[in-house]
Amino acid sequence: MHHFINFTTAKFSKDNAPHYINITGTDISKLRIDYSHFKLFFIDPEYREVLSNQNIDTIYRKLLKCFHTNKQFDSEQKLRREYIHWHNHGRMLGSVLSAIDDFLYYFYYGWLQYGKNLTFMCLFSIIILIIIALVNTLKFKRRPIYQIMNENAYTVKNFIAPENKFYKKHSFAKHFLYSLIYTSIVFINPFIQLDWLRYRRPFLLFWFFLIYIAGLALLFYIAHYLLHFK
Image 1: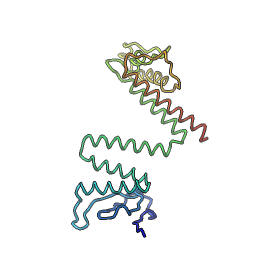
Image 2: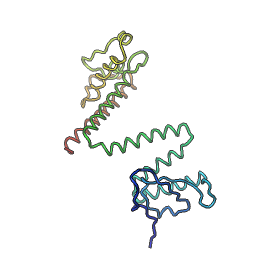
Image 3: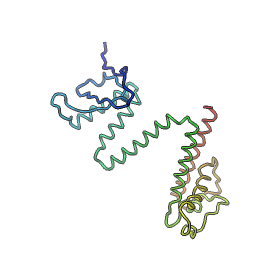
Image 4: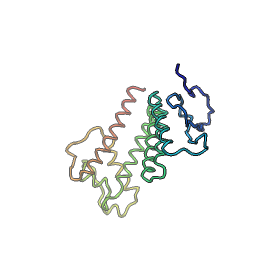
């Protein structure tokens, strides 16, 4: 007969505050726990001291394996982020990686929660478009990126970019307007005009395809939503 330590049926308050739990010395393979309600702490119950890094690492790894074996993927994801933060604590590169991991984590769960909401998808697409347009407004070698792209990566027919003198006399807002027009043509266009492609600046050509693919993916996602979720 198998005996398990089962916390999955426990009831919790609605304040979402984590319950700290010490599983030092526990047979972790027999632990059943929804980790969304918990957070680990590491104290030796006999000596009342913080565990060594090696022992903490072992506990994290065993609990991650337990969650994975029992297909508790949400708990595994939450614990893995906590483990990454602990492992990278005090390291500059680790802090950057942790920040990136935080962004990807909240983006992923935000997408799961709102990804089937048409209003959210449209607003998300507009925000991405504006961010890319802002990037394309930045100057590279005294010229805005979108203008260099238009000449050396993807030349939009009938799109007339202002001359360099324009950038010395006018505000950033007017610069951004031209960038937004150019970026929108690339971003919200399901078809590439092959005769508009230029191969003079490989990096800018790569940036063009990145913008195009991002816009194409969002367009197809919205189309898929309209066809299947309405």
